[in-house]
Image 1 (cartoon, rainbow, N blue to C red):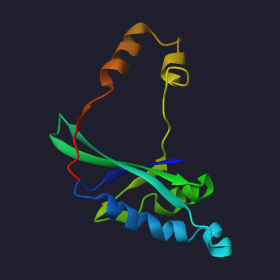
Image 2 (cartoon, helix red, strand yellow; image 1 turned 45 degrees about the vertical axis):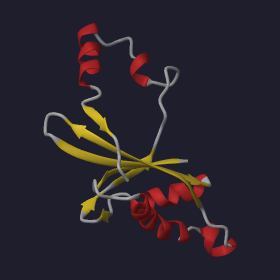
Image 3 (cartoon, rainbow, N blue to C red; image 1 turned 90 degrees about the vertical axis):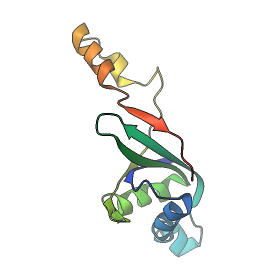
Image 4 (cartoon, rainbow, N blue to C red; image 1 turned 120 degrees about the vertical axis):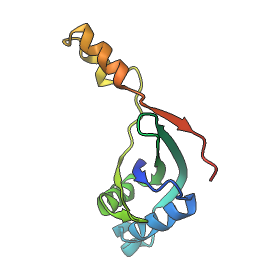
Amino acid sequence: MLVFFKNIPPTTQKSDLVEVIKPAIKCSPFYRFFHLPGTIVDITLLNLLDKEKNMLNAHGVVTIMPDDVASLVIKQLDRKAVNGRRITVREYHIRSEQNDPRKASHDAPQDIIDQRVGDRRQYELVPCER
């Protein structure tokens, strides 16, 4: 399962994120009863520049297997403080043309749809040096 970590400090390294996630993985029933820990498969860090505020927002996308352990990580780490910042943790959904709910709403007037398109993508992706 892909897990999205929102509002992490911009100085966060992949190893810092692993240290935050590992205690939550070890609390899973799989680990306690069967000694089968969850696994962090991949970590991607994203820096997004808010052009209006000229601020850098950092986020992480972590692949955790199995899905039950990932769900437990979400429950345990959502709204927790990491390096002085309260983070939001949720499941990450990949959108495509087939499952994008914004495309399915044909009831909205065209000017509202155009405004929605204009409101999107307010951030610029900045390469991570980590």
